[in-house]
Image (cartoon, rainbow, N blue to C red; front, side, top):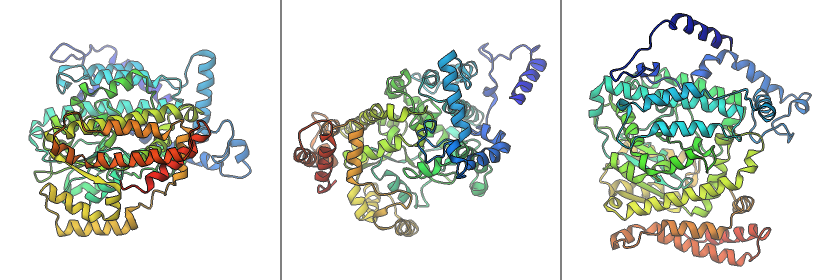
Length: 563
């Protein structure tokens, strides 16, 4: 706080007498317009890294038996212990902010509205527009409004303020870099392999299995977070940006001591891990996981679902890939995955990547919906919420994710019915788990790709390291009873889930025979749906307490049906 005050005084003393700099259009020039290298989105964590040991030491006090009853240990259900195991400093901050706002309408932690809106106005300038439909600035403005919702905690606002400013800064730096190095736009992105489909369908396993092929370029977390300047292949493993992002990760451990332990139960990630490329559309205001933290009826949520403005997001996406590819031997073939984003906006994606290879992963949706909802309600999202909101929003968030699954199934069915359907290759969960290498051979053969001996050996080694069926050591098994129990607590009937998803995945009316044949996943899912209904019928016809037994019976019915 002291440093911020001194900085503000210094800026006033040395800058107040200066007239604002204007650009060619006579508009004020914002400092971020001079960025060419992407900033560190974790700069706040880096600047206060010297106090992280103190915060971590205070967190460890909660594990001391004598002190834990007073501090609210993370495994005790005290009223002040939130749904997410935050450190005591951040729990106190959230409580103080909540009560202050309840009594006075004031906040301890506020979003920097004026500063953020000034950055949004930069994106409104013509030179930062990606295409005529680009309204990224409006998306960011609506995002700011969504952050002011009562269910977002003080810690959540602090984290979102940092991330959102970093996304806009990075977006502007990307455009500035490309403008200063126009040759980057000539870098070809040929036949990117993009994994789509509903989440929790073994898409991560397929992604990391294909990533063993040394001929494919895979994005790592650190380069997605700080994409410019382009990494040099000769120094890739020693790039200093890895340490900057690692410092940011450490700050999450200070905020929530078991953050990574809890999140890794659902999705393993790290600085040097191959990661989903969804962050690249964050730079255009289109959020994936972070967007789930906002309420589904917010104006931002409606903007995020609208496909009309998503071509701009994929143009930003492509610019980043071109930057990251620019120092590599050409052409570069990328391996990408962001199912919850790419699957919903396939038509917009194909405008920018018309030759994309689309690998569609399938699994019984009624099996993966509970798994995905548990991930949605993991600390990845709930760290941003106030205490008690997880249970309050459980049913609403579960229904929002059911709607997301519908959108995914419908978007894939619509594209499958077009000529782009020939660019799809279907991967079914049980087939992939039974014989991963058979699926890989079929996939490479389907697209005329060469599976080198090095790639084949690396893939077989990866499969052996994960154990039978490709099960990762990071993820635990989930039982049918747990799925049924979750659906019951979320207020969902399985027959509703089955009915809505089977309708969404049906081929559009008038689809040709080839499309019907290619949509074999839809037909098999329909068989699974019938079995689910049969199981549900056997489980009882009541409501309320009967729902769990019906859901459990239905899921048992699905267990006997091939995916």
